[in-house]
Image 1 (cartoon, rainbow, N blue to C red):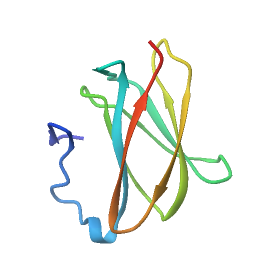
Image 2 (cartoon, rainbow, N blue to C red):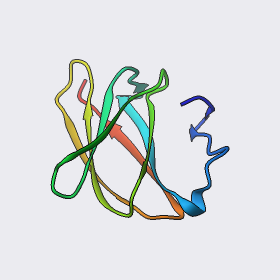
Image 3 (tube, rainbow, N blue to C red):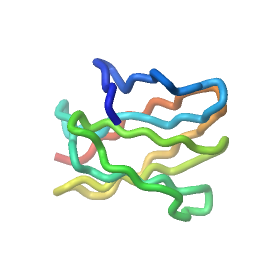
Length: 100
């Protein structure tokens, strides 16, 4: 996940018109959380994918249209589930806050 820019990940090279993108950042207070894991679960709760967060706490998934759950697993924090809707042609930006 290189190309991170201030305020989010760069979309250079991503054809957003043909993709449903879910991306965001994991934070503890105001601090980014590197080395957390974000899982993408489908509507039935089935595991679909998992990515580690970058040094700046960022993550990105390319998903199908529909409702998804992001399950964030960060060191020294309870898991956090966040619902998100992915739509082809748009970017769903998510900020996940984990416990201190």
